[in-house]
Length: 471
Image (cartoon, rainbow, N blue to C red; front, top):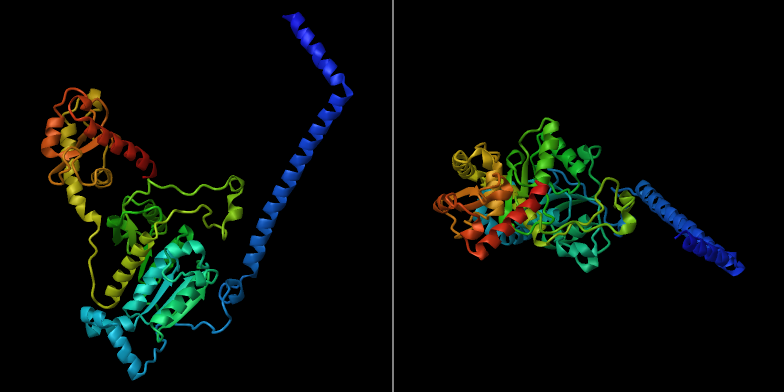
């Protein structure tokens, strides 16, 4: 063995003793070092340029009036609109507007429409949600609207922004909306503010005695600042939670922030507001749907080390949220509908899924009774599922149907596998009679149910394991 190693070492030494090999090795090493230095230098310069560009851009932008930056003409100047801004109409124009709003006059009545037309609304955030909310308020008769947003129309806006066209790509979202609004209602007073909302600008941007503020912001810190300002100053506000990564329209709800559940964004906002002493009084539009079937678009490899360098503005998200264009529109229209009925004195009482609390409590109570019969070997009799967990399993995982028969009446929850503890990942929905029979099974579910039912239940429970990571 030692002789063989010595022989190999001698061959290696002879090879490297060759002048040509030494030169080639030196050249390769030098090339590698040079390439590394060049790559590192370019990367450092690229990162520095991105940071310098962002810093200089932010320092140079006048969000209130830098029209050139936003690609719009300097004329006409924006109109400052308040609650007391006059709306002047000739008799002929009034006749046209009455005809234009005839269906709403029939629905809300003359007094309701007078209140609506006399109102002043501020919409903060003119993206997929805010643009639809503002548009429907205008079409419904609101004549004084202030729209606030710092962003521009892009090609990707065309799948969800109400006024986005290829012709408006590159101009500010608020200016695109204003042009569209004046085509529909030339008499309307539209205050298009190219501005970034913050706690420092709140008193100015929300000035003018608005009757309602619509929060359509997708930045968490800014959203909390707006809601806090409105709450402290007794300004009526409704807030949109996350519409991205959602696709089930039947899960969209309107509720007080204190009554929201099964929505990650609502939970974060609720906790942040609670820390500021705000427990309720903030109405929101949200979805109880779990965004488990789609994921955020991954960052490019070159963006992962310093992701902040690639955001539009500091503290704003970098990764792209997948959005089905219809969902922001539904959120916006739901907000608009709620606001216009409130302004017109035609109040509604949103019936959120929370009204099923009595059902969840009953199912949880019955589940507790079932668990009392379990032996300590199988997890004991102590039930560790809350009422919210019960509702989550019934509606989110089992869609309010028996896993065995598909029946929606007289439902119950029970263990799927008797030899495993009762958790959300081992919980199946059946009718009461099906659950009673299931609890008497001595073997495994595979011995009793068809392969199709077993596969279906296992698929749903695997789905629950994935979704539960985001609860």
